[in-house]
Image (cartoon, rainbow, N blue to C red; front, side, top):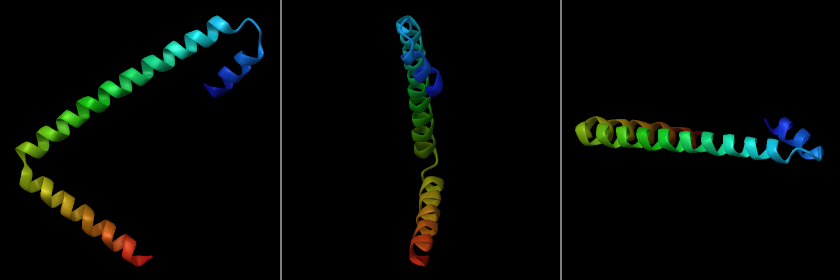
Length: 72
C-alpha cells in the first residue's frame, strides 16, 4: 500500500486517488478500533466471570517472564 501511495504522490493528477486511499485507511483504522474494543469487553467479562482462572493465568505469565528475564 505504501508503494501505491509513493507512486501516486509522484504524479500531478493523483489528488483524488490519494484522498480515496486516505479514506480507506481511516475506514480500516475504525474497524480495527471497533474490534479492539469488542475484544477488550470480552476479556473484562471473562475476568469478572472467572477471577480465579484470570489470577492463575496472570501468575503463570509472571513466572515465565521472571524466568526469562532472570536467564539474561
